[in-house]
Image (cartoon, rainbow over all chains, first blue to last red):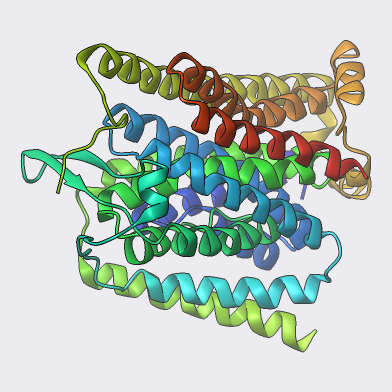
Length: 277
Length: 141
């Protein structure tokens, strides 16, 4: 394999990963990391470094659109980002100290969990009652719901629980080079009672900052290698755009279940790779 | 349930300011991504022009894979590489721009909250900004 061939294959894998990721509502990271390590035998550290940069690209692109449509709760994002960046710094720092095996096992576990989370029925209950932290931080908000055709106001609660969960999401993001949206969205819609659409948009918005905190460490450490990271960043972004274009057309639940099954298989393979080594 | 906006006592004037701020944030994110992709593309073209062997020789890949630890990862190394027209330095610069995009967004948010005279959120956003800057120092150690 020549360097150009290597880059083109990485590029193609990344487009596919980005597309599949956006179809499933996951970031590309969960798919591109196993693809690079299992298919191209790239060291998982470099795969993680490449993935975390691609996460910034896809998150920023999507966040730009959500913010314009006023779906994002910017205050909630800013407050929770303290926890996610702290977590990402912890995670990226730890990543240089734990072994490749531990990374592979943890990755397999988080990937399996995220796959199962995608099957969860998505609904959210409103919140009433006292919420001293959310009141003090003025986190309550409203958004325009296109389906309902009107402005929907909501109250936020569970700010401290949300912060704790976000710290954990930040650690996995920094440690594994993924966006951890599968951990962030439930923290917001289940613990803090934000409407699903606001949770998704706000999670996307925060993912870029969380990833940047981890990426800063990876970059300075020299784990972000242009030969791998450049085709991955561009490829995943292109894939994500293509994926969101066809998202409206395929929405079969069966297809979704099939993808989840594949993800579970890959996660098992990743786990085995870590355990058997 | 009371209807609350981005700001608690948002009049038509602040409402307009907030909308402007949202558009600024959105523009920063989009510009950052497009700019970094452009610089990475330049890096790819420069590399292909300067190293024709990359498309023919498999040995070059083995060499590159062995030299991964030596890729440019400080501002000084990237600057040096850019002067000598190294494609890899351009690609590294593009990746760095991408990492700095959310950092810029947080920096701009500090200014926005300053303009809105929202001290609590100036403090919160500044904390996030400092944590992001800290990441670059932690990675070096």
